[in-house]
Amino acid sequence: MSSSTSQTTSQTASRSTPQSAAQAVGAANQFVSTYDEVTRVRLEDPSRIARLAAARRRRTVADTDGTMMVIAADHPARGALGVGIRPHAMESRRELLDRMREALAVPGVDGVLGTADILEDLLLLGALEDKIVFASMNRGGLQGSSWEIEDRFTAYDAAAIKQSGFDGGKMLTRIDLADDRTSFILEASANAVTDLARHELIAMVEPFMSSRPGGGKIVNDLSPEAVIKSIHIAQGLGATSAYTWLKLPAVDDMERVMDATTLPTLILGGDPANDDPDTLRATWKRALDRPNVRGLVVGRTLLYPADDDVTAAVTASVDMLR
Image (tube, rainbow, N blue to C red; front, side, top):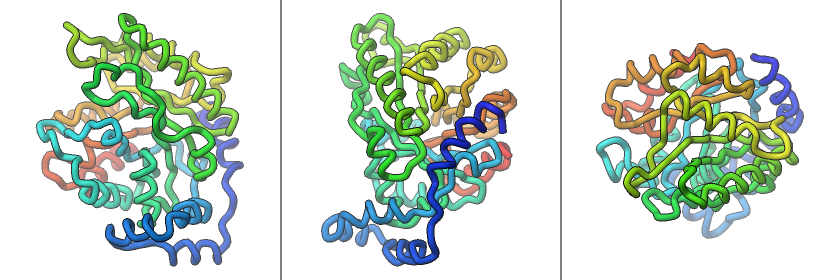
């Protein structure tokens, strides 16, 4: 593990409290096995969610081998339900949870990224045991909305992440120099970075230089120059960068791109419309060759592969990562 990651994760690890055998048994007895039971608990015993979070068997980034495989499922909360050519792929919550549970059960998968609704369903089902958990924070920039660039913080805040015993928060930070509302998201992201650091939680910032060509939908600039610019803007956000990580796309010239930062970085999944998983994994592998790249955060590409074999897609990516 790199020294920069070690410094961050040693502090993160100190937050983990050993769980007694009695606590572990008690938590296991409160898990449910069906989605009907998830609904019943939410109706009759909603405080069970907090009890399970407090008793959850935890691991931290310090417990990994220096690289991480994290499964992401925070797209639906932004109204993004499509995967590639399937516009409604993620509309069934039960199917999404089935796929999430299958992915998280693959050996070598370290953790998950999601919003409260998904993370709490997984918690009730016992799927977050021994996992690193990142909480998604800003989901207010609904896909296709006129205000999409002004991605308001409508999900987790730092205090809730800390109370849940999770490891950090992730924020999407798109930067459109032609849109005055960009200043809001920069300020909001900076405040979130500072607040997470006060709670000794990782701030995972996902920056893009973005625009609306012809006034249409938001397009992210994936040129090396644009990604480098976004890195420099993102890593300067907040009153401290001690707990800041980056979440970046794998683009051309990653050696030059990653030379722009000393921060630990995770690579995002890429375009789920790409039907050539071998090419996509090769792109990830080139990025992972950089010493400050510490793993992958992948969602739809692995949860909804073209052949619908989630276990095979996740296993191949874990094997490549390790």
